[in-house]
Length: 432
Image 1 (cartoon, rainbow, N blue to C red):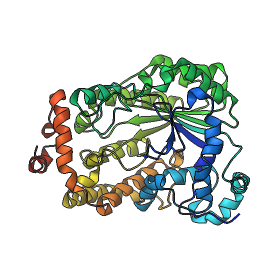
Image 2: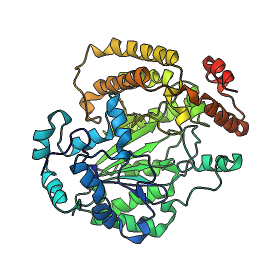
Image 3: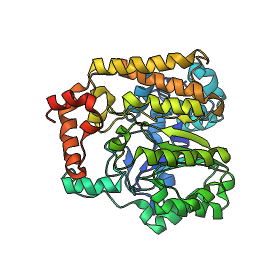
């Protein structure tokens, strides 16, 4: 078998799959393109056919060294120094980018890659690593989010005429689909990791149900569980269920410890978020869970992400920004004028310089290594310095941004000027 292209090959299609809130299946958790999904399969009991057969063309492209267009998010991350999903998935099968040839051949998945190359991309494997989007139940309406991921935002968008119809029904509202999925997991070979997303996972009824059903099946003893919460909710029953799992990865969504977070993650309040965060961190450390902040910097919060990095650095809590914000495009940090971007980058670089002399310059791929938390925080921060300085100019998006914010504010009764007065002249010049 010829060696694949080390710059494009990803092993993810041999062990990973994602479920969207509607129940559609997707072959990767990082892709944005909805064309790369298969309509509602969970209630049809044919997910395995999708994984083993319908994903075959993706595997072939990977093996033949072709660039898969849906992988552009990972390629963009690598271009600007951020650890990509592709690199993380490579590490899971023992492949190192800087020693690709040797580690590809020695990978425990090598025979599976070889078999797929001989069978037109097919595989006999089962998914071992799942991202499970439970639905759009959510008590928040973040300005960079969408109706598929927030029921509250969906209602608001419909009222404002930003969407014509409500999103599809959540797949987890179908009790039969949930039961079938749990049965699928119980039968799966070498099941390793399940990551749950919402909406807000803690208010999604199916989250507690699935956790309980997995415990009843005894799967909790052998698999790792991950979930992300927006830090506005606490549930004692779910907490007790989580304690029964082999390993828990706790993701905490917050953008910064500045009041602009209240505007971006409306209607949360940063003081309450901070209190709930400290409660989660306390129990997480007691239980030896992996704890990480999950940030999605926008043009309004990127100037304040240092507040997250500083807290995380001092308290040895991880930070993982899974990608550079893709949609909505007018919320990207690249919309800021170049001089503003440069100023933010310089301040962040100054903070990094005050810390990094104490640590190695090794590129850290395993973002969940508890012994490398501080090093990775600095590495992640550096990716934003690079992106701010060298990403393309998208400042033409200010009018679209202003139009969108004005619509949201008409129903929320707030104004961005109270949270980001430093951008008033830019907002006014774009029609605010």
